[in-house]
Image (cartoon, rainbow, N blue to C red; front, side, top):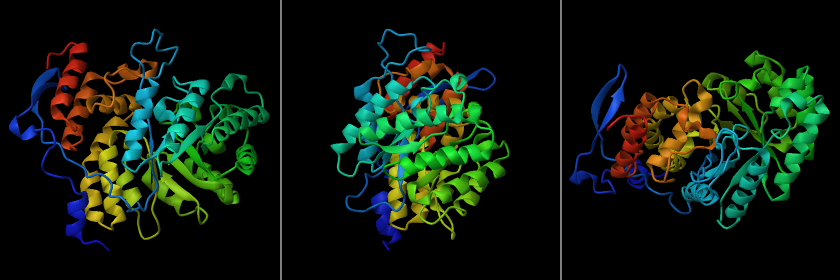
Length: 413
C-alpha cells in the first residue's frame, strides 16, 4: 500500500495553477434567480496530475463521449447532424490520454436524438480505428435498433433483425458491443419473456462478451416499462435473470436509474464475473468506491465533463487512497447533479458547455440545436459549480467564452 503522503503528492489537486491565475482576479457578471445580475469572482483552478505510467486502475472507467458539431455546416440542425470529425476524435484522444476508456455512440453523443445509425456507425468506425493507434485504448460501442422506426416494428423478429444488423456492422469494424435499450422492443414486447428471448438470442451470437445498457425513462421517456414492467423491482428481477442465465457472454451491465440503492441491490444479485457499471451521475463517487460487498465500475456521461478529476481520483483509488479519491470527486458531484437534473434528457447541453469552456471545441453549437435546451440561469450555475470544483482549466478563457454565451442571450457580463 502506498502511503497517504506519497499518494497525495502524486494525485491530489495541485495548488499552483497552470495559467498565471494568481497574478489577477477574474470576475464575471452572472445572472441569478429573480432577474438579478451579480459579480462572481473565480477561484484558482485545480491541477489534476496525469495518470502515473505503469500503475493500473482497479476500476474500469468508460466515459460516454459527446460529438462535436460542425458549426459551419449548411444544415437544419433539428433535422440533420453534421459532426466535426477531427474535433470529435480529438476529444476521444483526450479521454484516452487520461487513462479512461470510451463508450462510443451512446445517448451522450445524441444517439437516436440527432445522430442517426449511419452517422453513428461512421463515428464508431473512426473511434475504433483511432483506438488501434493508442496502446491500451479501450472503446465499446452502442448497438441498438434506432434505424428501425418503432412505429414500423411489428414483431420481435423485426427487432432481432435490427439488432443483428448493428451487431454485425460494429463487430465488422473490430468493435466491442454495448447492447443498448430499444424503443422498438418496448413497443412490441408483450411480456418479460419477450425480453428474455431477444437478449438470449443476441448474446448467444455475440463474438465477445457485451455490456448491457439499461437506460431509465428519466433519460428517454420512450423506454418506460423496459424489461416488461413499469415496476422497477420487477423489471430488475427480469434483467438479473437474463444476465445471469447468459453470464458467459455478459461483460457487465450499465444501469442509468439515478437510484443508488437499486444499483447496489442489483449489483449484489449479479453472477460472479458480471460487472456493474454505474450510470448514476448523482452518486457515482460512493458507488465506485463500493462497500464490503463490492463496487461498481463506471460508464458515465459526466466523465466526459470531469475527465481530469475522474482520472486523478481513480488513480488515487488504485493506490488505496480513498481519502484523496473522495477529496477530488466530492466537489464534482454538485456539478453533475446540476447537469443531470430533470428534465435529465437535456444533460448533454451541460456536457458540451463544459467542453466549450475548457477549449475542447471552439463553439457552443450542438447536434440537434440542443444548446438551447437549458436556461441562461442553468448555464450560469454550471459555470459557478465548475469553478468551485476546480474544473475550469484556464479561467481567463472560460470567462471570455462564458461572456460570449451570455451576450448571445442578451446579458453583458
